[in-house]
Image 1 (cartoon, rainbow, N blue to C red):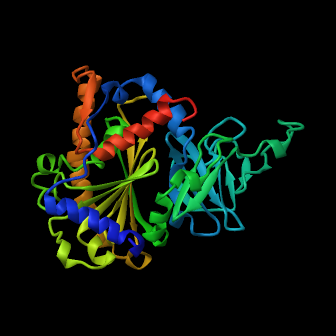
Image 2 (image 1 turned 90 degrees about the horizontal axis):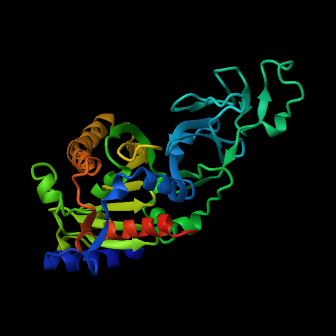
Image 3 (image 1 turned 45 degrees about the vertical axis):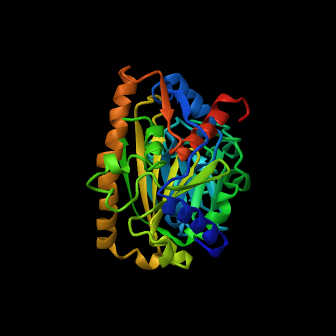
Length: 382
């Protein structure tokens, strides 16, 4: 965190910390519990959010080599991203124009100058152009120029790579990131590299995963023996950043009088960013953790959560350190937060939950998140 917002962030948190309080919303927030369990609502989300918004698909460090590529599903859609000879990134739907199979099967990373479909051997360049067919007499007159991989929009900034998973949907990062753009630049996120990734399947709606990162009211209850001794409960400094938001969580070591620099301040807090639609970026001082729930395309009660650990390049070799560090985080999050999400999902799916849920004034980050979703999902044109 650079000096441009350090004083403001410190002053706001100090005021709350001294008063033993937290940022409060003007009133409570209510919404139907069906948003977590209704397949029709999931379809609306797919169309309004995941078909229209930029989606985080990769990190730049995964595509650092001049011939690097990444193949992976993005919100259920197979996507292929390739570094071009001029250094730009281009993204395509990962589907062969012959019979539709993935040109690169499953989730892979690597380096190549061409892609060959394993099914029938059709070959494509990293620019998506169809280079060759394994039989010419079977496809007389096929125009290779119009049978390349279908391109989708791709944008790279701050070490992150976004795609629009539907052809013809543009990406405008200036508008999408808004005031968050300056914060991502200030924290020098683009200097960090992927140290490791892992993936967890959770039997819960993707938004329940997002919810767990957007309030610390639950810390003293759900995390009594794990996180509660280290992080204050019900004490956050919340700031909306356009459609996104930021929350600063003071550690138990927080002492307003002990720090006079952004670096010292950062050592005593955890900063959590929520990026629409489905990214939680946790800044823990010397590293970042990304938790990204990918909704199941059909089932509202299931998601896949991608976990990414980002560290400085000079720290990437400290494998044992990061193994221990990430294990501590994921043990708490998977065994406690994700378990709570699955418990709630059983109530929603099984018809035990009340028709309407209430979110407290002490959960302003949730209010902001769901207002943004409602504006996009429920309002034509968003």
